[in-house]
Image (tube, rainbow, N blue to C red; front, side, top):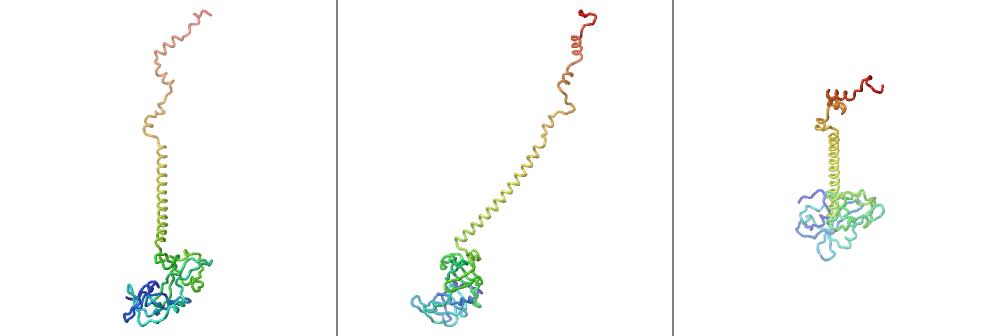
Length: 260
């Protein structure tokens, strides 16, 4: 039942007004505000579904909030629809960028209940009456000028504003971008791991190729014992064979040579 420090204007307007006499004065219909200083003065309720009768409530009359009702103290001020339509407001005004192009519309406002000061506005890209659309926070300091139904800013687009609430589509796109970034980071990490593992395997393979296998070292002959074919032939030629060969090739004596 106690009042919060801040409250969205839409949360106030959707509740039925009930006074301390227990009378239901209908749901909120529109805000009663002073746009030049960005302050909420009160709100307007519609006591009956038919007719032009309206009731105005000051913000300091608000005493508590329940799930469906706004509890007020004291009577409201009776008024009519033509008078209410002349009240200035920025709610549902179009938002213009620095080029004068429409980039959205003012859908809601966050109000400091102790002073009525509007902390920030909530801007919608689409129809502000759609509750599921995205909302961006627009502080009053970023408003350069305002006219009935128009709010001028120096923005390049809604992306210059902080996102207050994402729609289902906006949330899906945001999550998709986050998943894509995570997938890209994971892919880069795995690629680095594979590259590192490939470099280690290549280094081990080069070291293995440079090393001489044990079986080749065992079969390779000792250089000290290495002999050529001629030396092996001389070893196989024994003394008897040498003597026989010398006898066959010996020339006759000089005195027995018939040619002399």
